[in-house]
Length: 280
Image (cartoon, rainbow, N blue to C red):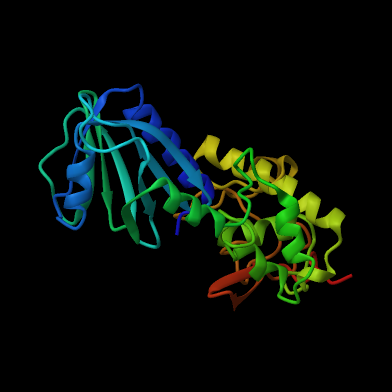
């Protein structure tokens, strides 16, 4: 499932491709979003926002006042299988299960396989966002709100970081990597963290996820631990990017040489170094 940096980058890409007040064409070749696409067709894209793993595309009234008011939003959650592809020029003939297709005179975008693609109101958008925790990539994020839940919980911190009601946008890679970077045992109860530890974790998430948006991949190793600095081969993985523990089970830790462990936690495989990430 894409992590929050991917959704923020998609929001920026939609704004770049379809912003500027130009009418946007829309359809649903698959048919599952046909009514929503018909209401959007010919209307300008007014906003593209991300909150955690949720993407919101806001639509202005069409020229002449047709098509509703400016409070219409397309709510998209990619889930495990959703993908968005952008291209230049007019869209090619539809192939496969194409849920939503957008295009204008310069380019097109195709959405396939999302868990959610629904037309919602302003009030419904706020209700979705109210259920989410603070997003490290949003300027309005309040890390104190996450801390109040974490500091009162017996749940392992690694599970709390994956709970979108606690922190929005953090997925399996960022949770494993940020806990390693701060030497925190993933099984420590949230209430056993100090406020200073949480503040450091939050600041690191903000920095790492901003880099994820910029580079369109997740890199978490510090400069002194890159392949060039350490004289080691670069990581070869479909997910790309250099990491400390994620998907490195049974391999030696880059810092201490201890074998990286893995175990299921919060319905995903957790990765950690038992030597570098110890309980105090």
